[in-house]
Length: 303
Image (cartoon, rainbow, N blue to C red; front, side, top):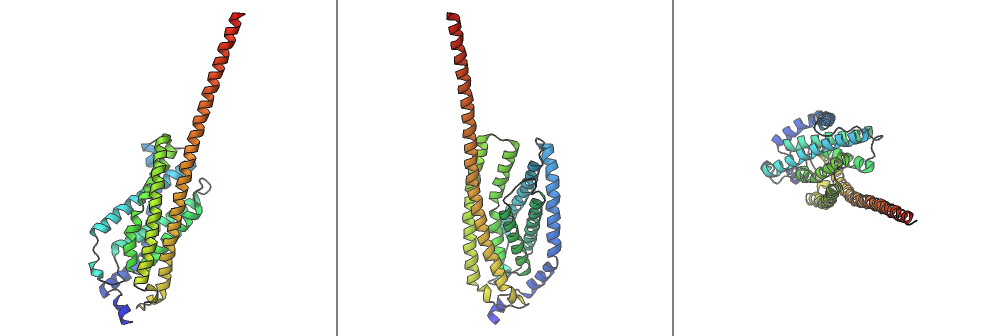
């Protein structure tokens, strides 16, 4: 018991953590409102700066793409800042630690996951996304964020920047959507789809590595069996299940996205080949018709 208590927060960190917990609901709600505003404003900006899009389904995809790209850029910048500048020396060798910056970022991700889930539900009649993957991915993010904010395990601080680095694939996905909607040349779309397939395959590998690291970390500190103050012992298993199961689910989602990227690439190649064949057949038919007309004229002259 004494050994487990030594892994817990120091008195100063505990005061910060308690104050932070009181603001969790407000910060998540504020993040949700901010992403909703960004989603609505982004469509107006895109219509002013680029070719106006009238189709409601494409408008929904553009709104989501712009908001998703903004979230990915913020996540990447935050992860770089955390990896380069964050100092966790005050945590020592403790298995539990509180960091205000990480707490704010978890709130941001939870608000975005809530926005994304409601956005696709509201637009379900316009577009058909991968509903089961969107639902599972958002539920995992919300559960992991809430678990991290209410249970100050150091694993959350370590995993957060690593998970955010995987958002590179989201940026490629947004570029792919924009090219498809704005009618980019097929060779550019093909190269983007190849890149999309590569980055999501890499994201699946990264998801598998994060799953393995999560299992290793939880087992190293025996989080499931710790006897902690503040009544946190009853949350040990819940936190462990959320992060371990969530990491496994995310890995399967990334793997399915990689498979979808392969299918989209094959469909684009098949569509281009089909269009080329139609053009060749039309040219051949036109050539045959011209040749037949020329032969008929020659016969008429001979007569």
